[in-house]
Length: 331
Ligand SMILES: Nc1nc2c(c(=O)[nH]1)N[C@H]1C(S)=C(S)[C@@H](COP(=O)(O)O)O[C@H]1N2
Ligand SMILES: [Mo]
Image (tube, rainbow, N blue to C red; front, side):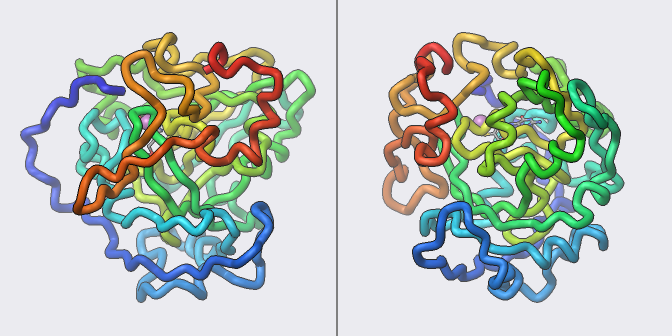
């Protein structure tokens, strides 16, 4: 992060056109419990687009269409589709904020499989189709707070990570979960780059209780449609109370571990990026303040700077996970 961005001289690739998306009106359920589903209100009923899920493989269209809304979002307005899909961090495709949008379009995401191993009774490999069979998808409108001090509200479609992890029967020795992104330099130009500082493949990790927490999801969709490549298709982690770099994209591997895994940004700059990476306005990055953030898209007037909230506003749900821990030490 804050590696000097290298402007590309390549022309904007015209085949990477985001599907046209209408910001659909979303009725917020008044007084709904934060974790309660509203099965009575399928997300599709609120959609106004004519050609939903057009880019998705057929087997993914039905679960996307049947995704249910939830009460998450606190009434916040999601960022426009164009902001969410054209301002990204996905260093596999370059360091520029629009590099993922420009260069990820041809990444192959179907078929896709995820290999799960380590401290569990039933290690194995599942295709994404297997993973989603019988799995209810939910819309989760979450804030995403990047450690670089910008943020967005994003309407993901996904499911609890816990639902997937339980299928592999983790052992009591599983204290942490490690995640690995696809390593494919032929498809990912950033992995071929001589400027790269990341030790590919990108890897991340969570403590077991963080991984099993109901707020932690795997996303397969955005705005009711299939997840665009630049956002981590076809399957990416979303941990809304942590800095964005924990939310690893295009996951192909999951490993249950008895010890804390190494994580990509911690490997590069351990004093700047910790394993926990919980959003915290009181613990500054060594090179900048974390007290405020730039909420995207910025308005016409000014930079739209807002106060950063402890645990990104999810303290009621997750603060108990860290009871007794010194959050300055375990940043
Ligand atoms: N594999 C991989 N995952 C990644 C990254 C990355 O470079 N590679 N960037 C992270 C960072 S720093 C952020 S802020 C979020 C951005 O997610 P978005 O582009 O979907 O908003 O993805 C995270 N996941
Ligand atoms: Mo980030």
